[in-house]
Image (cartoon, rainbow over all chains, first blue to last red; front, side, top):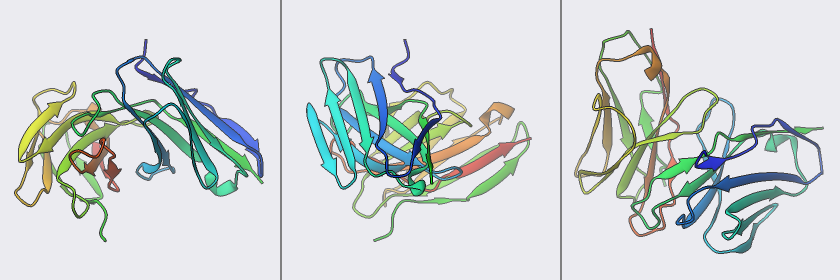
Length: 113
Length: 113
């Protein structure tokens, strides 16, 4: 079983719709969770971090964490063509400042005008 | 406030050669992590440096080595390059004790011929 799994996509949504991106992880000891956005040919850019069960909202983005189900998701409301990118889910297995990030392969999102 | 910087941006080497990549962390950050991202994959953790010492290491051979300087900048060295080392090399910086929120630099794209 892979440590962090994401659907590779592509996920295609129309402009203005809600995009839902999902991620599961295998290590129950994981303590912090991150979503990064990566445009083609560029480096990952941090969008959201979440550490506790429940929802965390930041503008059009909402991260959801369910540690019991080992599941983390990202919702993008009012999707824009500029949101078209690959979204990487990352998990800090060790917690604290010493942990390294374990990444999924990413989900490619395409927002159609 | 300068973000994470990396040099060079692109590099072409031949098999068997050695390469050195450089990273300057975000202002106020003391921890540097290096990742390798192959095409179509998520970043994979190489190692992390803190207080000029390697604190954690991923599943990479000894051909990959690094260094951190007193000003927190870091180098990644790869010896005896293989074709499979062609990838985007990412540096991420963070602050110890900050739940490992890592910010990525623009990356160095290495092509081994």
